[in-house]
Length: 359
Image 1: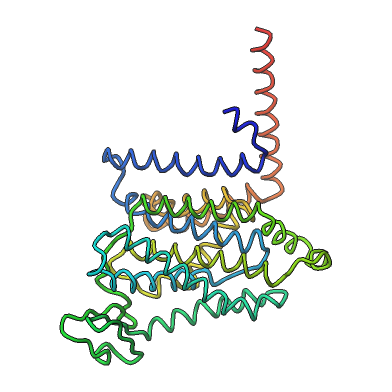
Image 2: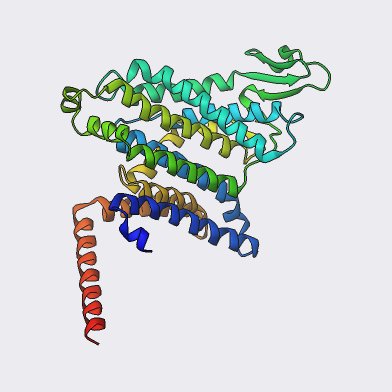
């Protein structure tokens, strides 16, 4: 405890994020082991971890770098289908499932990162909303390409076609991995809640260390005042690409985790609506607020399940809750209300402390 108190405020905040995630994991794991978690909530655990990684990584681009990206689901899609291809190709080579999943995550992250360089190099040199438009188009391009992609594997290796699965020319015993608009069918589920928790921790380590590093301070300087940062010698393209690519790599890894939780994966799961959903997590949790993104992603993923008792009005109630939370946390009146609450809580704490010292 003394060591925690000796940390500066930033280190304490980062440490609290690790504690928050670890405690949540232990509680949920205990409830799951005891059979006290409903099957619907149990099925939400891996998607929650994937969305937390997505929200924290997008916060790096939107909250820390200050650039609006609307194609985060596109990077997730690239990672997801890369992961599916890798795991199914290695099915007869590596029998240990967690190792296959880790290799798939690394491959998904690398391919998503390389894709982000292709998008980012020409666009990040520009100013304004160009990145939002290009990333929006990128997400749609990825979805349409995946819908036209046929990939199979046999003893001779991978086969690729843009026509149909019959054109793959697979040998006896070959498997069709991706079947055009039908997506990847018959995927072996490898994702677990433990792997999801590990990926969230890895994401926090990467993002929080980057933010608090010299490079992270340069990224925030670009966000706050691009001209002043440039006049001090900060390389704009380098640091923008660093933040954007890191964000995409993590999105690709989250895509692998998400995809390997289902037996069928289609491109529609990673469309524009998914990008907007992740952006909502970031905005609701607070720009640049890592803990807020974690909480918002977890709560908003579970909320539709918790509101099932409202039947037909479930999504209406969900939308009302979103508006109410936004007004309370980001509106002027809501902020004042929170400040008053904090002042009262601090006053009560001070009175109790004085009473304990006197008594």
